[in-house]
Length: 150
View (cartoon, rainbow, N blue to C red):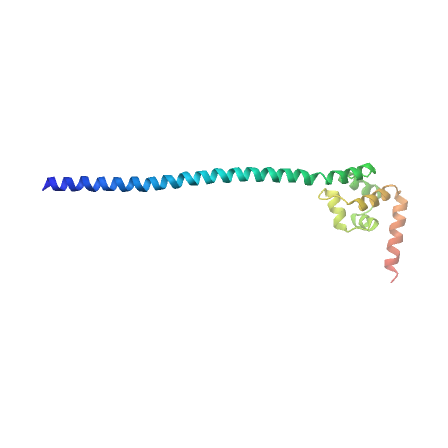
């Protein structure tokens, strides 16, 4: 009887090995196809990233002439220069905003360097820069007088 049990055991192990080899072959084939698909996807990603980089560089180019136009007019902006201009005139940020026709928040952002003024605002700043301290005080007084009359 032990001979029969040994033969049964060897037959079961042979069939189990055969089945596991068949299933392993299916898994290896699937693994090979997945690796090929991953390699193709990586190539597509690399080509798409190259296109994005190219488009990003071309999108930056139109902005450069706009900056050159502003610089060609001689209008430049520095946050610390703007803050020192306001302090030179002895006016508050709210008064400077009123003088330039912008919001108080804009003046704050310009002075802290969080944003830069637009071209029209740069021209207004350049016009104010040419004024003296007394002229600035006179303009502010003139702007404040109509508001207090009604």
